[in-house]
Length: 195
Image (tube, rainbow, N blue to C red):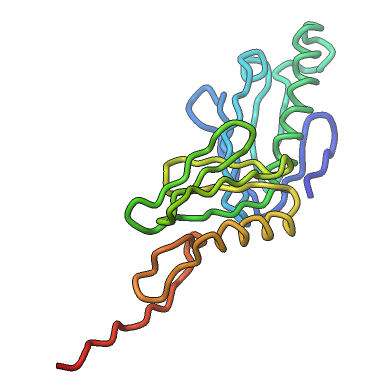
């Protein structure tokens, strides 16, 4: 879990990788190595200009550049409080979200995301398949053959991804169908007809 040690530091879990990008240190790239979820968090200029940001031994530090926090202008102190809460919430989401990736394999197979979390599948049938994704699952289609499902609820995520896979399970000869990312399909050899 992520712990707030004090108002200037956060204890980060071992399975997190955090990197401050560029010389200005105004972009923080966070990766949960358990789920491979990566997010870039933009750090406001007033924060990067007035705080020394660092990450050592699983502690993320926000050290004021002045001797005392109260010496900072009130506006910057308030902005820092808002950002500290935002930063913590972003890490909390990254820690508690699970992800499933499905891929479509087959000529003409594709998926399109429409409004209200509706997916339209073309999977080689005479009709399209329309499927409503529940509101507690975030869905993203980076291209027309990939589906990313994300949720804090691991069990529901597993059920929904299994249901989508069942629309067209990988067939055993060419592997055409819907499969999980990285899923290995044991293909059968096509028997040659005897002459």
